Image (cartoon, rainbow, N blue to C red; front, side):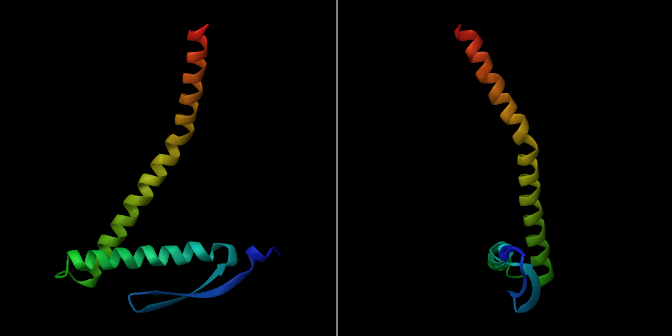
Length: 98
């Protein structure tokens, strides 16, 4: 088994909640980064909306993450088309330069 594929336990801490997870070693950094992002979003929204309940803050965080994912999915869907447009543009420039 590849060392990066090895599964091991990590502990994620978000707002005092410990989450023991089994992850592949080569994905550990992804989980650690996700933890930092969620904690940052929670802290940001708690500062902005200090009068809101924690469950409302989590709703804001979930929605913000969904928007980020939607944007990313949208960009990935467009990427092959954008690449093809670049190729066609280069071919057109080549034809016009003759």
